[in-house]
Length: 211
Image (cartoon, rainbow, N blue to C red; front, side, top):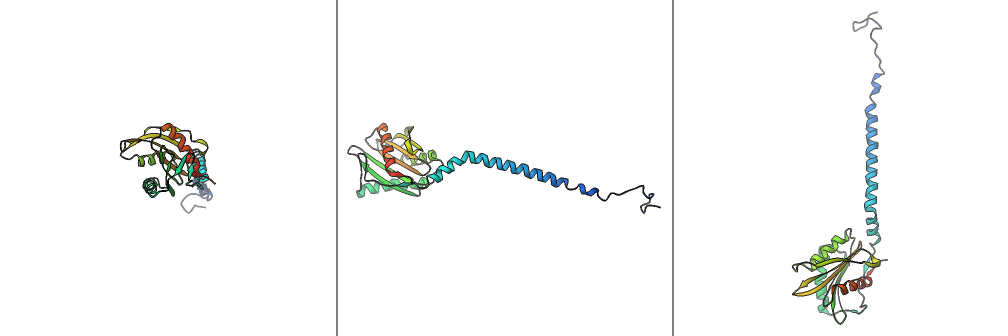
């Protein structure tokens, strides 16, 4: 018997099952998908380890409130129109720069010095950077803050810093705090930086409240 293609019958055989080797590429694609998925999972895990604590703090401090007590230690809140206008002017500048959700401008007196305090709430991811932006606003064109240094933040945590600046040829102490839920900056007249560092902690504990 002669093969239709010209060869003897049985000399040439055709295995019709040979094309079944094609699934190999699909197996390799599946392996790539598994590897890619593992890499993505590892990246997500690493991101969680790095950013998870920050996210937890931001969410945990999202219920922060700012209040304006009439008395804070020896300080008394000035409710005069002139004081309100001055405090509101500075409040508007800071709130716009750092995008505060709610904010207050307050002026306190203790008989010897004044404290102009601006405090507000927001979801703050980088407290130190946000505090720097607020300092830049209140010391604009005045040479910035000299001798800026960290201060113990106390039980509320976050970042607290103090320094000095010059406004209209007068030296003022500048202190502020920032955490993941609030920001506060105070300008103190006739008060040393050391004493102002203590006062900012008193003011903060009186105006910042978390549920």
